Image (tube, rainbow over all chains, first blue to last red; front, side, top):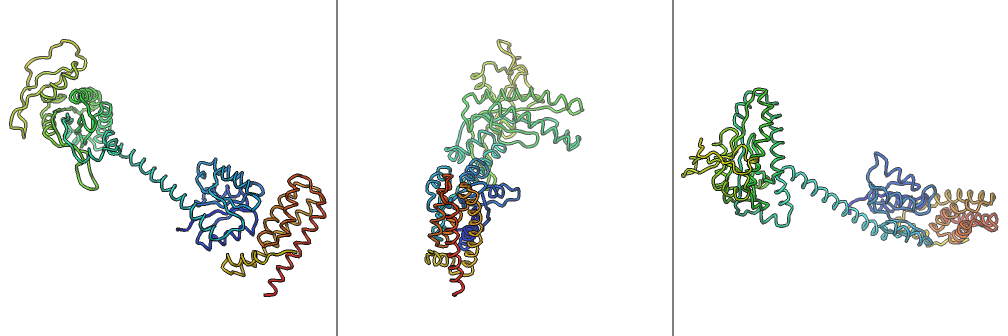
Length: 373
Length: 115
């Protein structure tokens, strides 16, 4: 066993000297106090070295063993320190009382070194186990809260859930993917001061991030001015297409007020959003030491191409996505966006453009027909 | 006078036969017991039963350490009565304690001198 640091509290010099000697003989470090008050003082001192165990005499002037034990147990920082009560033969009543008060064990005053060794080992081992447990719990909590900051809340929850491993290993599912990026961001970042660019990005990420969380989207990544968010995974969302469009509308509205500020400073920034639905393979992507929760599939590439093709301020949605969304949310409004020829897609893709007043338009305002870019 | 030789043998045994250290312990005992007896004497003279309790308790515990059984018993009975606040013949009993302690001390020091 490793050396422990033990505080010996006893008013009788003979007992203190003998205990200290026996403890040193079996490899422990010792600290001494003449009574409970001095013991508490030394434990609470600002420069106090932590102690692993206390050997406590009962009958002492100023502050006896019972009072000391009560003070220790009501002190948050000292509560878990194991206390072994050292008692004379006629103090058995006190022993019972001390154990009820939380003493870990007791030793007779005429102590046998082997018993001393065994009881101290047991108490210190227990304390170390508790310390380790507490450390482990704190580490897990810290990791969980750090994880929640780095990952989408859904993914963080998934990682710490029981069936997380199976889902992380990889699975196929229909998702709605959404790409968001900015028009003119490159020229903005070339002409504005770097501090301004960072300041803008921070405000932009904070605003968009809050909306993604609010709409329960899974943020796969963000890079500079771009976001990739998807719905229906890892949490199932039957209305994933409609959710994605609602998030896009909220983002566009929020972005309008954000960019108005920047327009006054002479920077014209516009948002462009592409949305597509389809099957994707989802799970852990990356390598040991750096994994992301990612999605791979045609729908993701399509959403990315659509966002690239979207006009400033436009939400461009694959026809299939809009059909699904319309079914789930009859308040959504869109105009046909024509068939788009996109890089990597052999056939032209039919699209819809989400109307500006989509959220507000309620009944029967027919969207303009046949609008194309 | 009673002095249990086993107690001394045991102290030597548990300290790995460190006679020098055991001698230091005995000196500690003599010093400590002397001041406890001093306290007992003034408490008895003042007729203060409560003031007898603590030095009597410490002396009892010290006596047990060196195997001075009779000294321990005398101290214990003073402690027990002291807790009730009424110690009959306190002065006389403290004098017996003192006489027993003197004998124990002399025996301990004689043992050392004989080595």
